[in-house]
Image: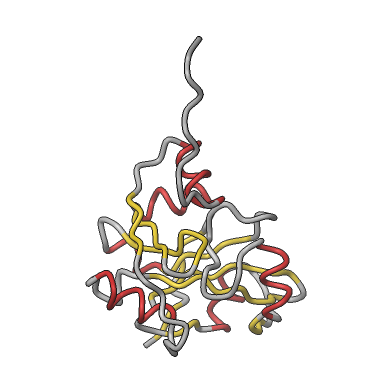
Length: 165
């Protein structure tokens, strides 16, 4: 009788989704410091990766619909550009509790992958300038590195210039 495969230790819905899709990826873990003022900057520094290759996942409200924005940690989200990218008029940052409830992840660990409810996703166009980028793997202190095209494909993301700075 064949043995059951062992459950991947530390697996998150994001890594499970990547594995199920057969997408190549690398998981990077680091010790999260709860006192760190910026989850994204902390990840870039801990992994020794340029902040323009580490992307943060933000949830915004565009005309009443929650939308995911994936932008470099080195910059900020341009809410007006995000609204334009999805054909909306106005975008504001989503209520953190609503973002957590809808995605199934906690703030600082929201991944664009494996969300409880798949949301519209916009990936900053700068991602396509890198062979791989890092995004949250669904837990603070855990990042996943993958090709931007794979991330866009798995999330149904549109690429648009939504980051600034």
